[in-house]
Image (cartoon, rainbow, N blue to C red; front, side, top):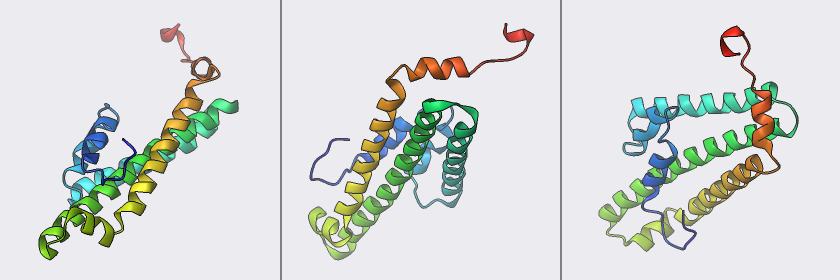
Length: 155
């Protein structure tokens, strides 16, 4: 995301990029229909699963790797949810602009978009920082050493 003073109208594209993985593909379309009950349920279940994964990481890994992995997963989950909430706000801004004949700036001001945009940027920064922590100090090697497949088939 580019830090600027305009509403982030293309936020859905970022959500689709972040969910373009085999693990998250089931929720990638939820950004297109944010108020669809079935898609909301899938999204919330996946976000809950991510919270559980972060907690499990704290039990499965040792040392600084444990916190680095958990914080990265939590930051990723938090950013996805923040993007989802922001898209709901953008949809409401669009509807309100039509109903009340507001400009984009008026809708942004009336619906307090700036505060939510700042929260969005903070969560993106948190994800970037957690990714940097995860990648530095050879944590990747430490994590790989901790992940050992047991059993004769893997040796």
